Amino acid sequence: MYTKTGFMSAWPVLGAAIVACALAGLPSSAKALGFVPLGEGALPSGNLVQNFQFTIDPGESVPWHYHPGNIYGVIVSGTLTEDEGCGQPVKAISVGSAFFEETGKVHQVFNYGTGPVVIIFTFIVPPSYAGYTGTIFIDGPRCEGKSGRSHLESPPH
Image 1 (spheres, helix red, strand yellow):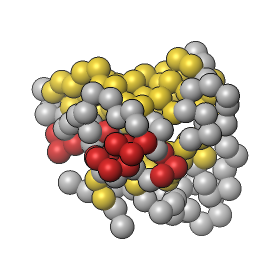
Image 2: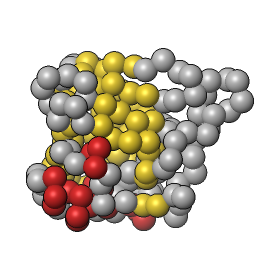
Image 3: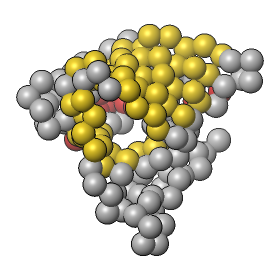
Image 4: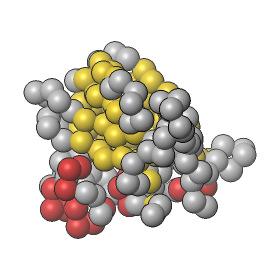
């Protein structure tokens, strides 16, 4: 089942685990995540550019999900571990690294370190994802045969 989540709502900071779970519908594995919106603006195409800071505390994770638009990220603290499933090796993305995720790429991420992972994100999403709602949780990737690749998901509109 695919659903839009309030995971990246317009709340300035979702600090406490109970507030995050109750208001944002986060899975318990993502309860200590921190979200700080930095700005959202419309492109001439109507798509939105959203900038925000995202923090994952040690031992926390973001379960299987994808995004309805392209995203760019810069790791400013810690090391993020990404799992794309389908037999692909996990990737460690360390401080000072930038990365890109294409629309519909299914993945899950972890902080296996001892300090927080802090990421500055830029999302480019359709206008229906205004208010920082551009994370869609799913059960896991749909693998493309024996290719080791995950099927790209089509975002709901």
